[in-house]
Amino acid sequence: QVQLVESGGGLEQAGGSLRLSCAASAPGRIFTIGSMAWYRQAPGKPRDLVAGITSDGSTNYADSVKGRFGISKDNAKNTVYLQMNSLKPEDTAVYYCNAIITTRSSTGNYWGQGTQVTVSS
Image (cartoon, rainbow, N blue to C red):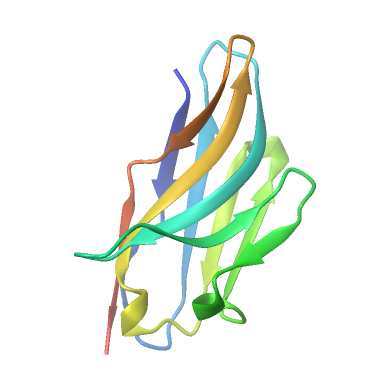
């Protein structure tokens, strides 16, 4: 079973920083990771892309976070990170990790369980 486990959310003041992590695992299985991304969903709003990173390291960002957030990955650890700086109250949301993962039997689009980020003004 492929799993994405997120960590690093919490409560932070406006102007502060948080770093989210998402580790992919598939116990007993050989797998490869394609693109990875972070999405977020605020109450009553749709889930939106925050940042993405391809297998070759190309990145893209939502306009609202450009210059403040940075996505990176550690291929050896099968982990993607989201460094969030200059946080704003409007960054408050549940943040979800997403990854395209290929095992021997299939390729699937996987989601983490979500981690809450709350930014106070």
